Image (cartoon, rainbow, N blue to C red; front, side):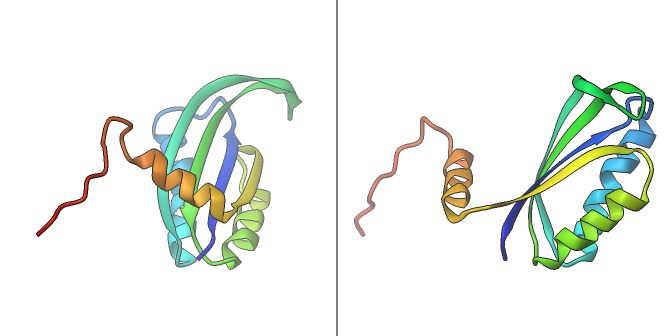
Length: 117
């Protein structure tokens, strides 16, 4: 299955349980579409370069996921229909990125050693 990165901006007036609910709704959609959420990175509330729907700030979130290609259309529909999301982008990562992601998961101070039996 392909690896995707989804970045979305949630309205800044959603806080606490509402914000977690907005993030969990995206995660549940991915799982419903037979995908797997690999990581969630909450980048916090940030100032945007320009106003979107009268908001100058938004809560940024990045999801890394592995899912069939059908998930892109489902996410596109989800973000357009549901309120609370200001912007989103879905990017398919290439094989090189997959390898980088796996290498990033290994701590830098760990060395590979060959074990002779």
